[in-house]
Amino acid sequence: MNIITKAIKNTLRIEYPESTISVRIRRATNYVDSSDKILVYVSDATYADIKTTLVHCTNGIAIYPAGGVAAKGGICAPQVWDAKTREFVDADMCEFIEIKTDGAE
Image (tube, rainbow, N blue to C red):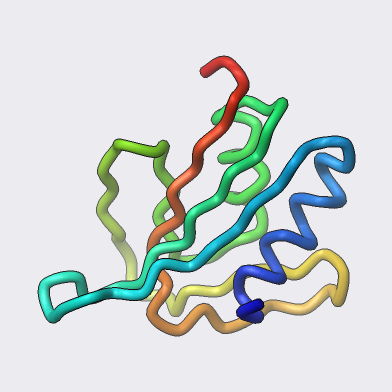
């Protein structure tokens, strides 16, 4: 498991201990897809709840619902807070997080 996905999963496990959580990374496949994307799935939670949690534990990463689009703004380096180790993890080229939930929007 990638250190970035592990940090996100640790944070979400603390916030949503009873939910099924899946965090994967999709690497860019060509020059046009210049950034990697993190795919997050959480059962029994709404998109708004997950987004609020991730906004508080990330810097410089755009968060959007599955099937949506996002644009990254700003110049700060992408970082993810790991609630278990209480440290920021450098997210390198991962500038987007796509969220899928079973809960209501």
